Length: 484
RNA sequence: GGCCCCAUGGUCAAGUGGUCAAGACACCGCCCUCUCACGGCGGUUACAAGGGUUCGAAUCCCUUUGGGGUCACCA
Image (cartoon, rainbow, N blue to C red; front, side):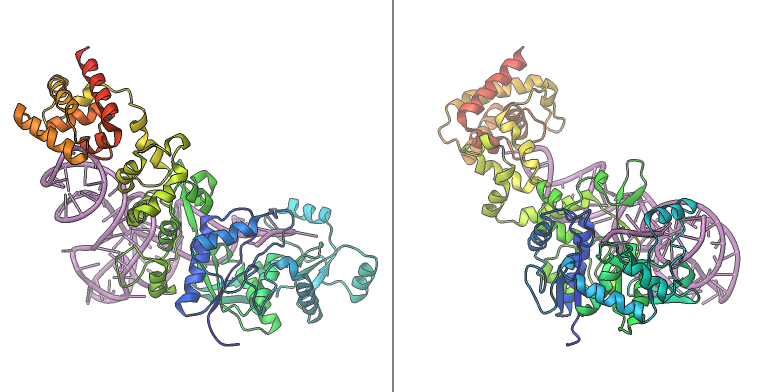
């Protein structure tokens, strides 16, 4: 074994990848890669009730989409497998029994009824240590009678336990606060509390990277390392990701805050690269620069644990959109068109002007989901009000727009070169000839042709896309409306 | 409730005893411009409160307040 940095991402198969989990994976990956280390994927499926089929694929696909390469894992293999906890049951049993043998764990035969009664007595109290001091004979007898049992960790009753976290510093807890947690469940599966410690040790994990919700239970894990005589890993607890509630308060980011899984986000048209870039900056910032746009590769260069923040951060969709816009604009058009395809209503996909529409829209949308709405007016002229023709800067009114449109209609009807340049030249010339500002002329035509006060592209760009027939038709309609 | 943790603008954040307290998003204004977007320029908004320590505190200590996490045969 060398002393390379080894981190792991150990999600449980819940069916979707929470964005907070992705960030944990990203940081763990970055910490490993910054040092040329190893990144392990391990599936923590010890809770059989909550197991959701197909989850592992979601996890693997997400990591792949985010470009977080796995060095060892269920999909890659490796020298420390298996990487799925349900396939490691004998290991946990062996280590749990070993712990009993050396006096730091014990068999517990308390049944559900007793535990529930305990809980009713004091909802905030833990296990009372009822089976802590059973004699060897009693244990042997119960075992021979096949009484269901669990194995609990025997916590010290005095003193304090402390450890150093690389972001939060020294954490110290009175041992009297520590309850005798279950290590091995009655169904023979280990709990997270036990399995992850055994696996992290066996797999040579050097940095345990996870959310700060584990900050206060880590003393229990640290004790396990001590009991076994294993060197403790380094701990890197990450500040939680929060969401803003309707009433302004914040709480752990969850579904009611909006899209929170990676799949939800990509389904709305956020690009994986933008998501990754954004979440890298949620709870971390680089020391030497104010720049925020970085590729994954660049992040491995500048990422450091020292830059990780302690306080929870609120997930801000506005900022995500900003990142997304940047990545959307950087995307070569051909690629953008491919990404856009699934977001275009089927009946519009073969419209001849679709490519031009996409070119107009690419630099103006926040996420791919916006494509349909942003281009809708090309297909359906919105109902609009005469007041749209009022523009202060160009001094337009419904009245002068009407005369401009009448002139424009006439000129456009005779126009051969229906290209953006041709259209622009035509209208520009017309405006000079008729003595109106070009901006005013453009305003009138643009509104007539789009029915909107704000459009992706100018009057002539829109007309080029729509074609002569539709453009003329819409202008005639506008004239009719203004004359009414 | 006990325990643990956190506290700079609406949000993300720099800042580690001496700064006019960076920067980004959002918002507002101006410029550019066939509208919008992009780009450029400018602006509004912050050290939770109260005590200390110090010549000097956003930075150190205490208290309060606020927020979060955790107390499962879930992870």
